[in-house]
Length: 402
Length: 140
Image (cartoon, rainbow over the protein chains, first blue to last red):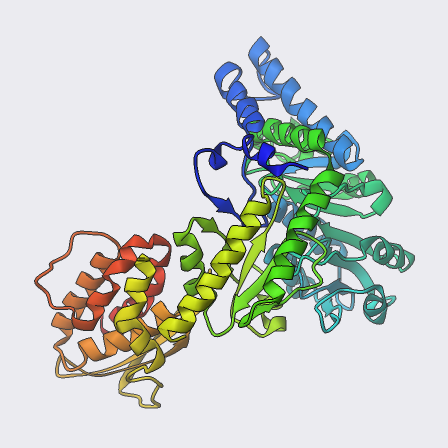
């Protein structure tokens, strides 16, 4: 794959020497997505489901066509595809609507230290309010979730399994299909955080057989402010809405109201219309390249970067076995916030911090790390500049006395 | 020459490697303020002892990047033994300088002047101001 040719699809990469290595936080946006969203704002920027005029009809059609595109993309149906503000709000919806109602004292929720805060805090809340217990899958010394370790914590008390598909810090892929089969055999329900997998590899919710799955638009070349919750139809049918208001009802009386069917009962208020249309355009863009191509490309760049990092002194890579384009590392003895300013000066954008995953930081026993993540618009020249900068940073911080 | 080089060469590395007034005291006369920057994990505690309107002592402890840790040390040397009113004035002036707001250049910041370059690194202003804000809270 010639990534150099993809750079031109991204306005943020034109006429700049920017090396963007923070896709795991947010990806860049291609022209086709921006154009599609502009078209909404320029030609039919009106509300959906409400107006009986032509423009509103068009907005509604485009919005619902986007839902169909997204549903088909993950192997779900229209009714099983709920629009949310992002993966965080989708994961919260599962915890609030399913967890708070269905769990009770004595039940167990299996989670992991690899979870993003958005997949751990909602379930801490459920545990506190219902008396259910959080049970952590023991990680391997490298920090992985394995099927064997999962079996150690799975029991007839397990009612909920809450795991990430790909860790946003370690880049490890969870053996989620095997885990789901085992969880279902115990009658447990499984919520999957797919924010770091859906943008990079084909995910089929039916094949995976997850009960709930969430992802965000802004990590897959789509806009911010939109995410998707997939839920099995019969589960969504049984859930009560957690937000009430306009559009989610079909009959309102003084002391009672009747709610629409899924997905609408979860989507009160004016939805992210331009964002839904933009996300569908992002999916179209990624598919035009092909996920196998994207995955192979990221993997190639990651391997090249890892090979070079391993040869350097004074650098610690925390996930040499990473399965994806995510590399987490530190310059020994240099706080990542000191280090990241060095890279920033050469216009290399990278994440420094705890990545909203403080439990992983505790597992690694570090306050924070640097994280470089690769995507389709990165190329070998980016890897070379990244490595040259790591070398220069190492020399600089050693020289000034770190 | 890198901007960053200017920044680190000066006072900062000295105070980062050899912090003054570091370590908290178990003394009821001291007022304590703890601030965390949750986005990066900078974590600073400042302790001050004020008597007769004078900042008699400043202690600090915490973890974080070099800018954050060294600035706690720098402020402890700059503000110790000053009247509270004057210390607050210097602190306010310093924070204005870091955050690129108008500030009074005639106020002598001494070692703290070294952080002026932070204004070229807007993502780091929090690192350079967190200890000073904690200090202000202990005397306000």
